[in-house]
Image (cartoon, rainbow, N blue to C red):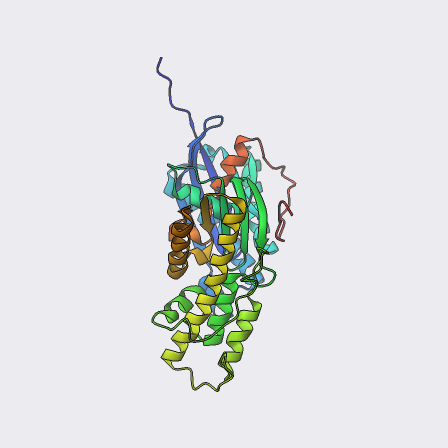
Length: 357
C-alpha cells in the first residue's frame, strides 16, 4: 500500500541577538516524521553602516534598528517563501545570549505572531543555532554527535554536542571573543569596522612570524581562551616596541601586513590547539564550526588541516550561514519534535548560559 508523504510544516524563525535583523522560513516534515529542514527563505537586514563610525556595535542603536526592520524583514521572508502568515505552523526566536534590548524586539514580534496565529512559540539558543547551521548545510549526513566550536564577535566556545539540543559546554573565552579581538585590532590598525575581513585582507602576503605575539593557554589542558593579552601586545607593538624591544618605524604596508599576519596566526594557533584538545579528549570523530569568524579563509584552511591530521569529518557552513542569520533557528524543529515549546510569558536571557558546567 502506497503511503502519502508527510504534510510539511512551515516555521518562521527570527534572529535579533545583536546587530542583524533576520527572518527565515523553513520547511520540514511534521513530527513524528524527521528530516533536516529546507530553507525556503532567509532575509537579513544588516546594521553595518549604523555602527561603523563607532567601531563596534552600540546596543541602543541596535535595538532601535531592530524595531524599524523587524516587520519588513518578516514580510519579505514570507513573500520570498511564497506563503502567508496563516500557513505558518510555528514561530521560533533566539532568546539567548545577546544584547538584552535587541533580544526583546525579536521575542516581542515572535510572541505577537504566536498569539495572533495560535501557533507554538519555540525559543532557541543562538549558539546552538550557529552549530545547527552545519546540519542545514549538510542535509544528507548526520552531523551529530560532534565537537562544536562557535567563534564569532561575541563568543568563542567549545561544546560536546550529542544532538542539536543536547549540548555540553567544554570551555570558552574568559575575556574577549576572537571576533571581538579582530575588530579591536582592526581599529588599532585604522582599518575600520567590521574588522574580521579587513584584518584577513591586510594579512595577505605578510610574515606571520614577524612578531612573537602571545598565545594564551596554548600548552595548558584547560579548554579556555583569552585574547586580551594578544590585543595588548599588538597595541604595544604599534606604540613602537616589537617582541624584541626594538623600535619600529612608521606603519607602512609591509609592516601592516606583518602585524596583521602575526596577530591572525596567533589567534588561529590557539583556536586550532584547543579544538584539537577537545577532539582528543571527547573521542568524537566529527567537528562542526559556526560563527562569523568561520568565514575567514585562513581559519577554514587551518581547520581543514586539523581535520585531515586527526581523520575527523569537518563541517563548516557556507559563508551565508556563518554570520548571524535566522535560518539557523531551524534548530527549533528538534525542540518541537520533543514537545519543547515556550509559554507566552517567557523572557530573554541576555547572558551566556553554559549547560553542563
